[in-house]
Length: 56
Image (cartoon, rainbow, N blue to C red; front, side):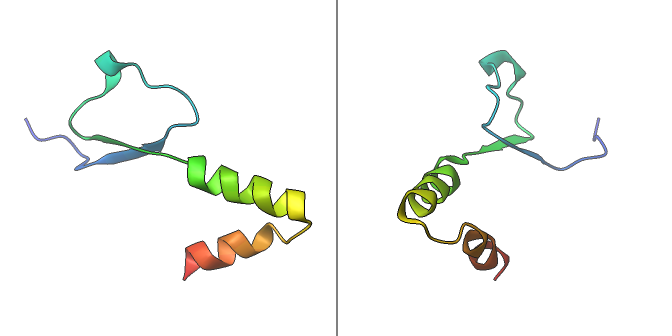
């Protein structure tokens, strides 16, 4: 049976056990985003600029 969703996209901020990982679930990592935010905070740079790059 075809469900109402083609795909569900979630982040890896909370673990998703293997038994919950279904074919229609895509897990995206947020590690690069967090790493860049930490780097910018450490260097005293703007964290808001990260979102400007993501929007483009």
